[in-house]
Length: 606
Image (cartoon, one colour):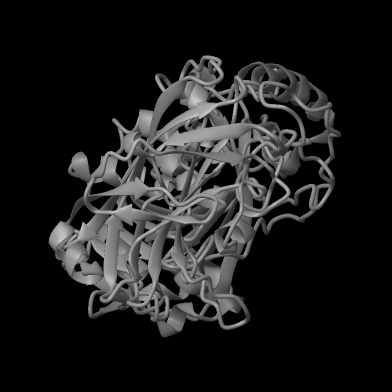
């Protein structure tokens, strides 16, 4: 439908109730946008849809792809000439997914091999015009914003092909933002020439969303598009390599064993049924099939092109990042790597971490202040507030503690050294003792990581414990590990869990009670993440990598445990049991970022 600007006098004749002497305006208190009584009645909202033309053609029809967009705005933007900033959300999920169809890769096979071909599922498209989604509307429209949604390329009524991190997924929201800032690339239909303008927009746009929907604000921001003033990504996937691989290892996201980038492609591909065959052949069965490499797990140009850290240079949108330290789906490294880059560029940046799993936005007041500052231009001082807000273990998500930054500036690295004890527990010591000890574990995916951590005696893992803590220890930052190991076979999984013992089970167990952080690596990539080399059985190699970022207080009475094992039943490929990993304890070191450094740790263990 075409949207016309109605002069106030005509609006009166049509029955609109307006006050021509005083235009409705947003209200601000304590640096936050408040509900405006005249804007809160949804019966007076205008809702319409349109298509925005992009600069790409990814569905092979020779025409530039157009994105389906919906708009929800107060009637006063039509009757009083009210202009407002925009909160914009984009997603590949709005028109439905394949759901629980069996589309994952089989992970029970040897390393360096590929499982049998997997089945492909088709999305049955859902949804009706003009409403794409109702998310964000009730929060923002009554507070003096316009809310806009768009479906990603190749999903819903948007044209194009889904690429799962390809350039078109950055350029699509860029085109929508350009329309919101005055460009005449909006159309009333997907194929027609009748144009529609965003005359009601101030040209100030903010984006937010969770998971994939949180990735797209970052994707748009990396284009440097004018008008995108602020983004609030929540648990965003910032690198598809880091999502589906780990230090050269084929590693699934938590809860989705056997998922890979082509699986996600099938999961979201809800676009025009007549265009799907072309997209499947071009994107899934060619580009992805040739680039994703489930054989070696190495980093390559395909993955580099889907890593937003490589595209940060043009970004200038103010960043409020949100994530959970116990998100084992989109792991916390995703948010930190972008936050770290943004602050190094001088972009206004703030990070909010909670202790729970996937999802979880910042407190609404924090989001409100962020958008108020950068979309309405209200000088509320948010850019001068502490950079890091972290929910402590016992607190509610709405009650974070302020810190100068993350990692905590008072944290410094402390090395732990290993002393033997297998197949029971060895020790973690603050002083190195050259013992000459080498200990061996036998890979067996039949045992879960939690079972291995709780076992008193097993050959399927090596575990090393700190003394019982007499005082709490605050870890803040990125733990690191160097393992000197030899494998009995040319390829092996390497999994690391950092745990807090004794293990707490039952309904009263908190998510922070047992697992501190985790990490995975392919020993074949000990030199180069882009090129692995087969291991010479019996030869020792040094494998160094980072574990997932964390900020956690380990309470007194617990022991910090380093667990080394091979195949992780929840995350890795699952080769036939029997591979042996031998660890040289003298060449292995765990590095923890501890608030107060070594002195604080010594007080806690002595």
